[in-house]
Length: 482
Image (cartoon, rainbow, N blue to C red; front, top):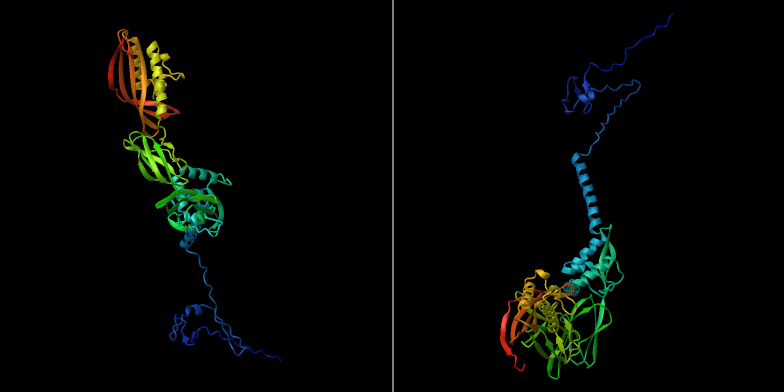
């Protein structure tokens, strides 16, 4: 007998029957896109194959597929922003590299010395007692404003990295700027000094600020620290019933210096150009009279009494050379202008010219027109032989030579005055006595001239001569005593 095997239908996969919402379990039709109960979107679920059913198990399980997030890309503007930032950083670094280059920093420091603007931030000192402020650096600015040559000398010294200079200032590295760049500053020495005076109850001050009052006849007071620069030191007191002030401007640079502020007076005489206004340490002391002198009596003394003068020449005001007259008690002091002849120099100069003119008058040969040092006549004039006044002088001398009635001519110049005319120029006012000899008598004529002379290449030369002004004329007979 054969054993008959029994067959069963496969487990139903439920296709063709109602489906269920995977979210709430509500039965849904295969054509439904959303669950009519909870609104769940069905197509994502129904498109997936139904989970298999294990008949051997009493429970079923289902898993949801986790959707992968799409990779995000940086927007174009983001890359642009990064590029801009990189360019700014590179540009800033390159700019800073140039801006903080040592020589560029030094140039800015030297400019600050000229103007004073921002100088305090660029100055440092190793002396912690010296406070660097806008006020404390003003004397240094004042000094270099009034002494441009000193500023140029300092600049040359600092740029050559010289270890020392005459101004107590060095250019040194003091740290970093913006972490990357070396920072340099002007390092100044701190100045300590001593003020001395010779009477009791004398008030001592520095730049108008009272620092001490003397309590004995021989008195000293230490001052400092100060930044190197120009300072006005003043002593005021009463001596023999007279109020006396010793005031002067000094360049404080080196330590240990003593400044004499004794109270006494001094008297002397100034010689110079009439109508020149005379100054001592900037104070008007009077005007030189028509005779060329000015007597100064009982002038308050200081060990730095700088004498100068101002003279108005046309639209220009000329300033005389400075002279320290602290030791001029009872003396005559000459006030001189740059390029202006003294009367003695002018006299020698004119004698040289008329020696050359006399030689030409005697021989009629222009090659003989030279002075005792063989300086030719044309060399006394600006533009030489092209100078109009040179030509007139040569024509005059040649005319006398050609005149048969004139047996001899002598020339005698006399300097009356020399005054400033312009920078490096002076005006010489002089008379020339012409002495003509002929067969019958001797004729004398005196003419006055004013020559403008300038100093060129170490020599004085005539720029122009004013037309002659006749002063007098007379005749001497052969039997006269003179």
